[in-house]
Image (spheres, rainbow, N blue to C red):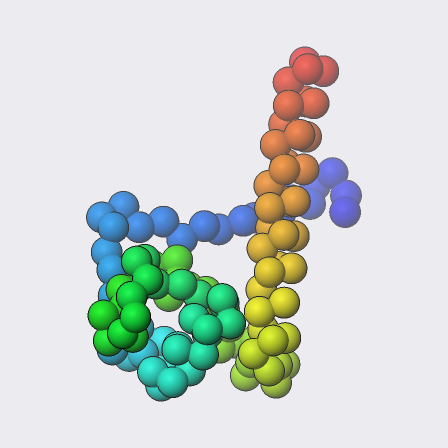
Length: 113
């Protein structure tokens, strides 16, 4: 990567704390409830507050964004659920490392100025 290249990281933020029911997540994610339940069981997404009954689950906007990412990976790369879980975990780690490198580069730049 040259000095002119940069990495853009976009984070989904929800300022009003909106939550979505299982039904709403399925509509917005264009998937069946069974798929969402499997994602929860594999730890890929999580309801805001765990509940015994899936009908009572509420999801935040970050879970909805992660659902979209999981669907894209499954559709484009034909991944199974364990593969999705591992891939998303690794993608999260890469994103965190990029943030840390950017923070350290910024700090280093400040020290050099």
